[in-house]
Length: 326
Image (cartoon, rainbow, N blue to C red; front, side, top):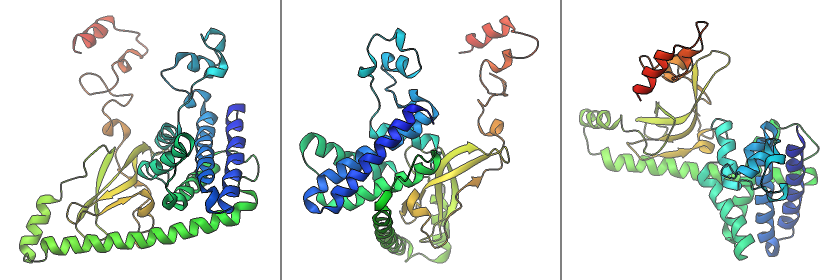
């Protein structure tokens, strides 16, 4: 682990210890607890990014900061002390993208943490009803990241027992919430389709089965709804399996158009019959992504420069034709 990553790791450990101390001291210091836990989480996210390359924690639009992060500080117009880094949310977004949807916390769950940390820091305000949820969000993120980093010491220290207890309480509450969502989805399904004959219901469900969830998602795969048994959609992020050299999808969300059931990544694993953690799409990267290196452009897809890297050298006429086709 490089020095930048180590600095973030040790800083995160100190801020988390301070957060636990404040949390243990009761309601009067809850604001300090959520603030310190938020800082600890941001620094651990940055420790992971910096362990890959220090430039990953830098604000991409600030050229001086990028020069310092890439070892070219002698050319930077500003000093190292003025380096601009990304914030908590952007750190999460970058790490989540690198870990291919395996973060146990969704962006929606992260936002209350960001609001709490910023609220305390800038307005001396936090939502006391959100303290436990915000705190356990930090613990869940840390538990996912720590195995990705070389151990530099006992991160949790004497607060490991409290860490475990808080997560147990959170899991139990989440299971109760999940059962409520499933019950509500079954009720919605019954209200919508209970008066249909079996034949008519099958026709209606077949008509809506191809309605996938709105918004950005890398890939959808059909899946049976755990509430109403209709056809729903697992959405996730795709990557290439090193073992099979095929494209796999890591599920991060489930949506059912029949009963409106919506489940996030943390809830998928709590189902009585959970979905697979990874789905092999059984297709090669070249077939799945037309622009994957090795394809031919513009006739068969692929990067416009792939065809110019062979042993025969660069075909300048082909280069010209490629740009004319743009």
